[in-house]
Image 1 (cartoon, rainbow, N blue to C red):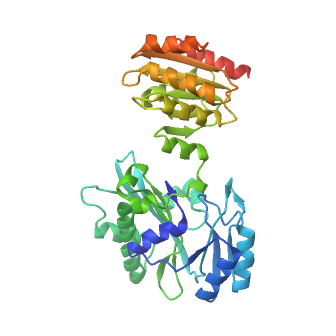
Image 2 (image 1 turned 90 degrees about the horizontal axis):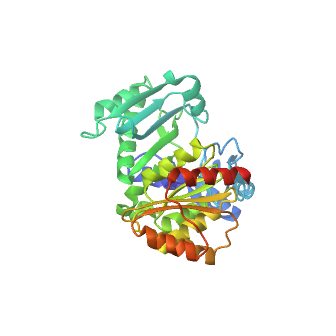
Image 3 (image 1 turned 180 degrees about the horizontal axis):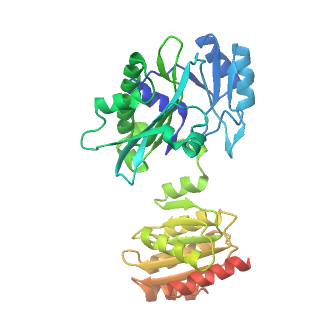
Length: 378
């Protein structure tokens, strides 16, 4: 789960990281009031789950409250990479001497958290990673001990030579690790981490992604979820307890079990097709879950055929068949459905489908090849 900058800054603040004050506005008038309260120059920043806000015109400097209002009016409602801006953060404009990058993420290859720092921070950090990767220093953290003081100092020393700046930065890096663990994050970054002409180090931007598996024990973090910022299909899938990831193909896949779902997508590719999604209905699937799965798949206009690949163990084939029949009665499905049904209560499932005028095969290769052919014809 991604969270907005103002929410990430709240987490950072609780960990002690020096973050400038600010307020969130949903109207130009609110932005004006916040700017007036803060006084001086402010920055009006679009709050969307996307990078490149500045380049898209979603970050503006304002010298007066009236100018902040005008910028908020222009930014609110703006489309940034397919996302509509519904909120802006109004925060003081800082005097910047230098910019750096500090981030940490779950490194699955290392099975641990890896820190990354670079003295070349700012909006073009992705370009730095691409063109001069040696400018980014990395450190993998031993999960048995967490980030140790000397490790934080080493990372800070990669950014600055001045001892007071190194000391401040080492503290902030340690606090970032604390915030990362406290929130159950999979990624956290400060970009940019700035120094001011007065020698202060501050985090003037914040970004965090939270591991969904951590949310059940962190209701305060789960409350940060912004439903308006995520696709409706993903919201429906989560509410129906389905594992769903949208892809760019045209073969809609409905499968039970993550391994079988991956194998199904591989086979779709093998036969020359492109999967439109990963969708795992899980074990012991009720007809209601199947209906929800079909509603999600059919909401994708790119889907030209729906492929069911069910290998019933805990999942009962008759439950899936009843779900398909129920969905056809409830949903206007105008694309063909190809079904593989084998395993627990297979005969009953096949009978239910045949009574509804549908067929089911038992060969995985047969149905996948058929589905790809129908998609390509469409």
